[in-house]
Length: 252
Image (tube, rainbow, N blue to C red; front, top):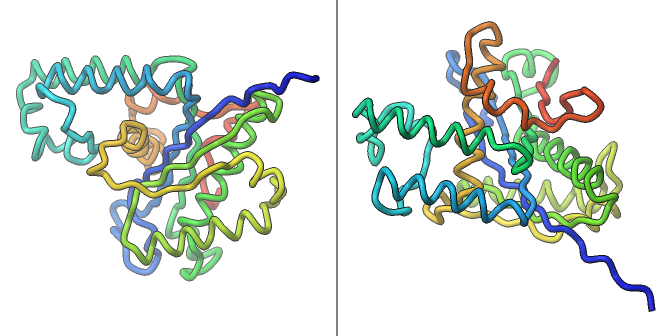
């Protein structure tokens, strides 16, 4: 009897930067970014342990939830980062973790709102459009690595019930119709679960996606401006034959 090859398991953690509203938005940040990190199970425990250890080192427990905006502002639980020594230790460690090779792969989609509205319309579901791109690229990557012998679970940060329901409806549509590049059969064969979790659930993968989404957004808005945080993570963007397929800007 032929031995069945065990499939490799991956998780795609998805978080956002900015909001998907095209009708009313901050003109100083006219961008919506959906950012995913794709982590094989064999690397996930390392990533989680490293982040938890950092939390214990600087906060004394792992209950603190990393949130990019609060970290940048040294607010709420991150007021201790006003201490320059603690801040230096934090950034040295988190940069070491995020720059680790072969741990995670980034797939992201950035919507430039003003040119998007001019070219398309304000009724477009930019969250769903971005999700479709992330799923396509995630499947491309796992198939490249495993010759199609992998399964994927998708974990998305929970928003309000109506938004969650709309996104789930969009996702189920992808399962029925597929995309331009991924057939419905291939998509449903690869993806084994799709779930929403909240920030309070303290999911490390979502927190890492959150930390990465902001420097990516800043790189799109101000590509000429020095962006050391982006430089640290850039090598982990999904790249195929020299092309950064995991970094989509719409329109471009």
